[in-house]
Amino acid sequence: MKKYSAFAIAREALRHHTGWQRAWRDAQPKKRYDAIIIGAGGHGLATAYYLGKNFGITNVAILEKGWLGGGNTGRNTTIIRSNYLQDPSAAIYEKSRSLYETMSQDLNYNVMFSPRGVIMLAQTHHEVRGYQRTAHANMLQGVTTEFIGPEKVKELVPIININGPRYPVLGGLWQARGGTARHDAVAWGYARACSDMGMDVIQKCEVTGIRSENGKVVGVSTNRGDIDCDKLGMVVAGHSGHLADMAGFRLPIESVSLQALVSEPIKPCMDVVVMANTVHGYMSQSDKGEMVIGGGTDGYNNYTQRGSFHHIEETVRALIETFPMVSRLKMLRQWGGIVDVTGDRSPILSKTPVEGVFINCGWGTGGFKAIPGSGWAMAELIAKGRSPLTDAFGLNRFQEGRFIDESVAAGVAH
Amino acid sequence: MLILTCPNCGVTAEETEFHAGGEAHLTRFGPGASDDDFENYLFMRDNPKGVHFERWRHVYGCGKWFHAARDTVTLEIFGTYTAQTSTPPQNIIDKISDRRPDWQPPQKQ
Ligand SMILES: Cc1cc2nc3c(=O)[nH]c(=O)nc-3n(C[C@H](O)[C@H](O)[C@H](O)COP(=O)(O)OP(=O)(O)OC[C@H]3O[C@@H](n4cnc5c(N)ncnc54)[C@H](O)[C@@H]3O)c2cc1C
Ligand SMILES: [Zn+2]
Image (cartoon, rainbow over all chains, first blue to last red; front, side, top):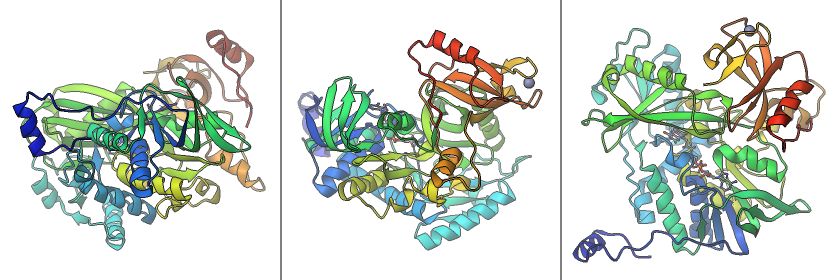
């Protein structure tokens, strides 16, 4: 693989861009792999990448039924933060956030990580107490966050109305090194690095069955034939229940639609990410100038990648109160993604009842930020059978009552 | 936007008049149950890609609960029926089989 660099751009400019290579090979499935990862979203690709990079396991295929990053990885609002309340969450999300800091260099691919800062607004006294508690927890966890007052919020976000009639801004939880990244680039960068290590990234390859013998996995069936493997990672977000059903077990997961929308591009007006959880809305401005807006999920199970219109209405209505300028914006596009929501709103990184099958799911409405950390931890779990980062996120926690209750920090928006 | 008919009061309305209540026909377990049964009842869900039996409440109408059979991929609603049953009634099963000849009624967990 040729490296991308300033020199490469200059060289290609001089020869009419004839020397660029494919970023990844269009691989055909082999008969057998040491490990197969189902799902080429960010989490699946990152898992494969760290299997190779940290554990030298490179006889790996990543099978994707559609196109690379066409699931939630290419549909999210790209907020990255690690200001969670519970220790196991802080550990994996902060690992992830810190990996984002150097991801462009590691992958030699510009993922446009922009640590512009994230504010979570406190708009009720309950939220003020909640976020102060989180700020204290973060201090103990070594995650740098700060509770700031309304004047500081106004200084950071001049377009905000802090004296709204229903929900005045009473302060906010500020993480200065949170931010955003280019979601497609994260998938593409990992795919390119995986392909470079000799792994097969296989698109348009849908897993239709999971084959096991005596309780141990032996391979998968796909629309492109049977493929054997020793170890299998299911990393399919909203489709986890469907895949688990093929393998013969159930999950504490429901798949629902989460929507987002973007406005017409406007001049730079907001250079941080703002989340308003009480009113169910969050917003940032993309490099193209579009206001990127996300809201709440539908209440019913859904696999259609579109949601109900009234959620858009509710989100925008809520944002107008806090950002009056939104009322004059035209919205350009709206879409949905199928998010996998668990009983305690925390992810599952776990062994499963089928030996050799590992599952990574349940990131729900907030797993973009977790891609590198989750891949790092999942690779260790698959390679060694255990990872300190995943210990608390096992499937058994539901039976044992050891929930990682992040619904305060993570129930709605990310 | 879903359009549902409440079998309790007969009103047909769009989904904002209703509230989704999750998977239907769960067998409830209480004290004395095995850990597996209790976990299954509280947390584990079928979450099918296709036919789903679910609970709804007519919150902004008569206020009562009912059941619906719906396809999670096409959003087609096969029918709604009373909440006073622990299995889908035969007429609903027949309607689904009409529309989805390959579909198998679920085994009770
Ligand atoms: C509107 C919206 C906004 C969001 N905003 C944020 C945010 O601001 N910050 C944040 O951190 N998170 C956010 N999220 C959540 C985040 O997008 C997800 O948690 C994350 O992208 C999940 O990544 P993944 O790799 O697990 O899943 P996906 O990217 O969905 O990848 C799973 C892949 O598996 C494939 N697959 C499924 N079934 C099969 C099969 N049978 N065979 C082969 N392949 C299969 C799918 O095609 C898909 O490509 C948002 C989500 C949505 C929908
Ligand atoms: Zn009614």
